[in-house]
Length: 442
Image (cartoon, rainbow, N blue to C red):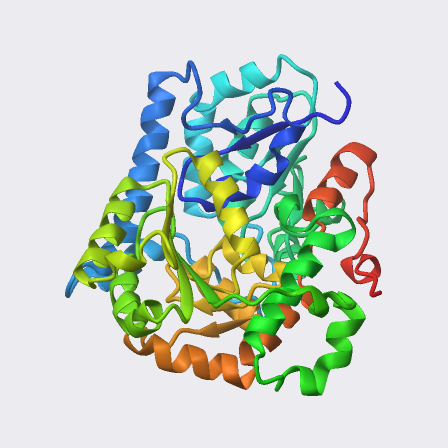
């Protein structure tokens, strides 16, 4: 079947599924296959996956516990801790985590999944390392590709013997390319593609992205402090899109992760923006994702903050019990968003859409590295006290800092992940087109 591939992910948080969503149309079924919850999954496999997911969510939520929460999460995070990148050295020896995963696979874990997808002789594109290991160990007959979801990764992403493994990696950024080499992955199995961003937010020849960013810059730079210095850059890459913008209040979107951790920030955020919301000087979207408990929590916070009159107008909760529906709604909301406030998860790559990110506290080693990467390219700023959001966020807008962050993410990010992945998988292109060559100015 031409230009078709199995798109496989796992239901653990949003990151792995968010990376798979833009690739769903490549699947022969038009849908993403969920490795830990598909029709006919053996009970033993479901139990193994479910225990892992529950453990992840348990420790992610532990950070909100009083007194011992941070200590408990710190102990868990040691397992997934990423070693410092420098000095460069050989890190190919397998970790205990990798050995444990392979022990389960060699006892049959995942065999049923691979037997099912082996019925069609098409490639596998997965956004989780365990499913790639399953495919290799259980003799998947076509190519195996793994989409990496963070700006740096733990040794757990790489097989027991990377020098002999045939798993190919689709890297979102150059640091991941270099890290994979430290882990012993062969050069010919590493492809710098960028993260797969939703194409509905980019549009044909960047039309959608440039129009949305032109509107965003207008909202983020009302005093023209950024454009007084870099106006030529804006015009060079966005053209005359500024003349078509429509007036609307500043729009902030606050998103929590799949485990629902950090939901409590919303309580302080609502109080901090209460006056601005009542005066309709700001729009606020609270992203509950697919978690009903987070939706209920946000709704109660709105009631407690006495902001019910704003709900459904300039204060909204984005929620859908189905992940695909949630991703679709979320991507639409981003088109009308000026600022994203979230922890440094896979969302850091969405800065390439010209979305400045206010960085909530990271959860886990990989998010520490994501935060560093985001701040290094200038596309994110660490949050201040949420209780005083109405003060500092408007100061940042007035200064033009957030407009600068929006353009930095747009210019330094990679928007062509989906196209580059297709080129690698279906066209055999070893070095996909570089974004700096494709991002042609007007």
